[in-house]
Image (cartoon, rainbow, N blue to C red; front, side, top):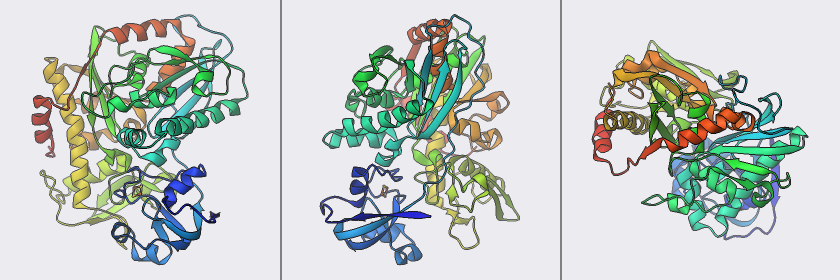
Length: 494
Ligand code: FES
């Protein structure tokens, strides 16, 4: 099913993507509209600029025959029609196994809103302050994904476009506002948890300093703003922004660490939140050392030729039998691409079957469908190697810098959507997580969202979070020689 949108006398200086954004229509644009991801496909009809070389390389013959174009590469030359396909369902992880009665007392009355603002997805929880728990949740894809899949693309947009910050802030605040309104309750308090860039944008504070060395944020938060000042509909109520450890270790990590009790537990905890940016924390009740590593978009299914986010039809489970791929898709829909967790499974299967060697060499594309429409390419394997090496080297560096060994780690906590869907055996086999730690892994789900809820409802959590903020350090990896050395070694499959 698709709906058609007519553009008459459009501005010929703007791409189709820009014209769609002006009408508040956001289509997937993982590379932020730079023509490198090939994911912003849209069927168009009318007077349009000729096909570019990039489009010829990214579109199949049948797509070209059917009028499919890349929205970020095509300009109108007169009137045209855009055919918008109905958006497919996106699985957003809102669950966690971290709820439970507050330890402390309730800090407010009435209704509160806890928000986990992910770069890709957003979860908005309605909390009963008296009951001390979330009673409802709404989730959606972050509308900013139309401006790039990762924080780097969003930062570029803000740095390069006039009113870029205001545009992106409006996108997220409007979406949160709609979710809040749909609950139909009088709200007395909100708590936001997100990475440092998402929190800056939501607060309308310029995050540009985070984009370039020495990566300085304008603020590390840990305070309240007024809802009306950031454009939310609920009048003059406080909005708490979680404290961030550094530019690339945000309020979502401190919120999650505290929500799963890692800051109070005996023994050593390794906490991982894996996405385009991998955030890693290692520590115990005496304090945590954190770092962040740019894993790139492979785990989100972007940057992979037939990659897909976790939408209906995305391949999410895969096995190789007799040299052929057997797979399942989300919702049982026809396959549309490979999502990040299946990419890890597939690579593990290719290694087990000797189709990829330990250096990452694969002779040719591995076809997933008989018609060759979906496949994994040698270049995709390289992207995965870069992503997994970044995470594994980040873990190694934290262990080395804190004088710990893998065997000292008592538990590995995987937070976030991606962590909940990956197969721990496959993750260990490709070397994403040290094999020795495989049996110690627990996936906790949306820990950041759980922390936002607890902040609203539990005075004890507030004290713990503030204490954790005081005893959290950060290591910058971008120029660290230990990290560089470990990164090269971790490129191999072990
Ligand atoms: S190619 Fe158009 S958004 Fe990436």
